[in-house]
Length: 242
Image 1 (cartoon, rainbow, N blue to C red):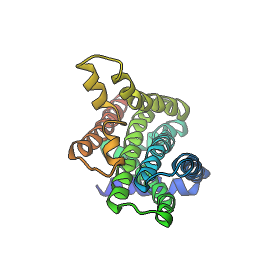
Image 2 (image 1 turned 120 degrees about the vertical axis):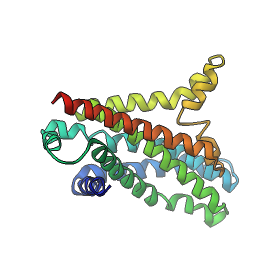
Image 3 (image 1 turned 60 degrees about the vertical axis):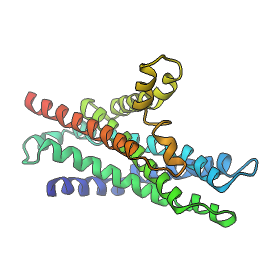
């Protein structure tokens, strides 16, 4: 565990020591703000709870995209720079490396979410929303970010460079995202299967309305751990091949 935390600390510092972390953070907050002003609080009058739900809907996409950009470099960059060789000769395990890198990107993702709190806080000026609703919405944004990071980290592990890792991670993530649309046009049992596997809609909607279901929490944690373990296995296979 301590080695994973060391990896996480090293990677987290790299987000702040390069322009990439600041660019991702600034872009996420800027686009989030535009969408919030354009769709959530503009137009016809709405109940405060509906404004908050709309904010979470548009912010969910930003969390996913940010997760992809944060994770695509985590392993692929090591391959490009040749520093992955240092890992193969170090006493750190594959699981410690993967989980450490995942933790660093997740923490940075949570920092971005924390900085976005001012937007839903504006609702309190002329309205009133439940703090529980606010907490459940940010919880699902955290889950979506974690899922996108885990999926793209796997793509980064199996890709030779950052560009391919980004494209592959985006492809995997979009596939998981649009499964709920596919579920609308297929027949059972695939209808229920695709709806369950999708990272949005079925599992996202209750959170955005202020409802936290244990089964949805288990889903997000399970899919995140699944892709992290896939990354561990892929890295183990590469290490054995030399």
